[in-house]
Amino acid sequence: MVWVIIIVILVVLGLWLASTYNSLVSLRNLVTNGWAQIDVQLKQRADLIPNLVETVKGYASHESSVLEEVTRARAHAQQAAQSNASPEQRAAAENDLSRAILNLYAVSENYPQLQANQNFLDLQNQLKQLEQKIAYARQMYNDVVLKYNNKIQMFPSNIVAGMFHFVDAQSFSAAGQDREVPKVSFAGPGAPASQSAEGPFTKYMPSDQAGQTGGQGGAPFSAGNNQWSGQ
Image 1 (cartoon, one colour):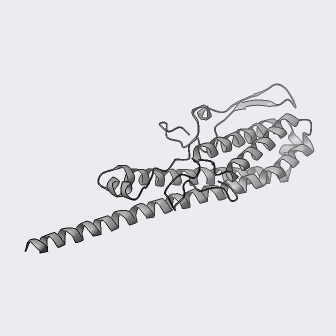
Image 2: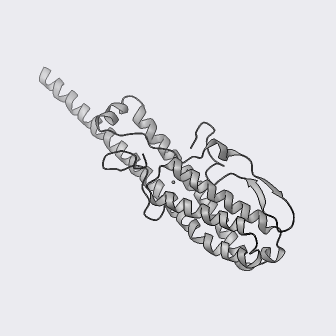
Image 3: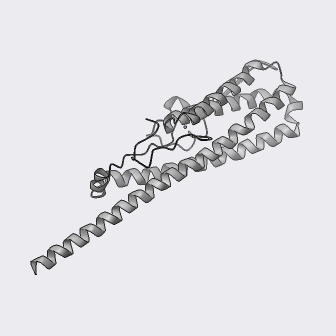
């Protein structure tokens, strides 16, 4: 009778262990997939930037500082995407690009002909839609990260997480200085606008979090060893 009880207990523990492990793996895969969805949207946005810059250059070629700012920010974001940067580093680079784009939009307000250009309007609309998709993908990703991290940290599943070396995932947030309300000031017609603006990852960011993949960029962690590749 005692052996039967022991066997039953071992079977129950084995089933719980397998169920908990599979749940952790499932959540980890969701985190990886969510990261990939963000990556796709960010790459599409980066691909539109050169066309936007060329369109603006046709009407405001002397706004070299603004155009160069956008180009540099895009290059920085792409570099971060290709260097296995952490989500925190990637978000910072992408927010720099968002501010540069908004600064470009602000300057375009001084050029009615540019505002009426159909190509510019189409690009602006595409970028707006992508910003909304990025914000949604980021929110979904962070929701999954929260569930995954809770599973790792809460008892008794934290026992299994420790046994198999599962580690916390990073949310895709922005640094504190990127949470400012957008401010635009014009020095005069044709003059560059100064601005600080929210990026696509700051609008929906939890206030208690402070905080980058594209092309062939890295995932938030390597599934093989459960370690963050960006760290």
